[in-house]
Length: 178
Ligand SMILES: NC(=O)c1ccc[n+]([C@@H]2O[C@H](COP(=O)([O-])OP(=O)(O)OC[C@H]3O[C@@H](n4cnc5c(N)ncnc54)[C@H](OP(=O)(O)O)[C@@H]3O)[C@@H](O)[C@H]2O)c1
Image (tube, rainbow, N blue to C red):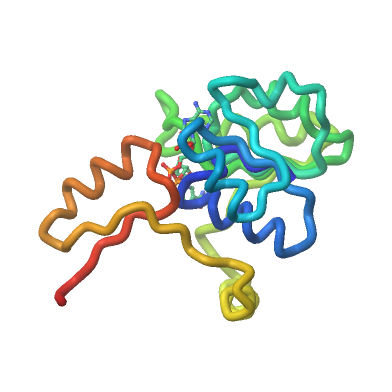
């Protein structure tokens, strides 16, 4: 499994979950977060300032594309013939908000041999079952939230600005009271 955007709020969970389910995991992140991504279970880490994962020659069964930093055609190049591309994030498009990158990946889906899907955040039919599974993994210590910084409630604007800069290591937390 390749996780593009492995060091962020979504990616730190994706890496740990893939590892917990027995995958051989490669994470893509910036230079500051290479050690952290390895520490949460990635077997290999690619620093995107040094190497373009779409040109490594390596093939993966699953690509979880959270950063959306490379075009769809380049992403599909790293997948095996029957591999799966999960489109999670990326820059908003000019015409389609949010997630022009996600929409363009999905639009190409019917024309390629690989499976292209997104995250279902609308109906969430499996929420309960997923939460029970997640709870078990957290209790077993296989999944632990990575927290970059905490901000008090009154500093939410600062927290959002920090998170939106796109390089927080894991989650940014808002604390209330005490
Ligand atoms: N579809 C959904 O259900 C869903 C849910 C939540 C979020 N999202 C979307 O997912 C995306 C990420 O969310 P997040 O909360 O994880 O964001 P985040 O915490 O800001 O993480 C961004 C990640 O992208 C990496 N990154 C930044 N520039 C990159 C580049 N040029 N090449 C490769 N990687 C790069 C960052 O690495 P470094 O920090 O190491 O540089 C980091 O791992 C957003 O677009 C968000 O809207 C989707």
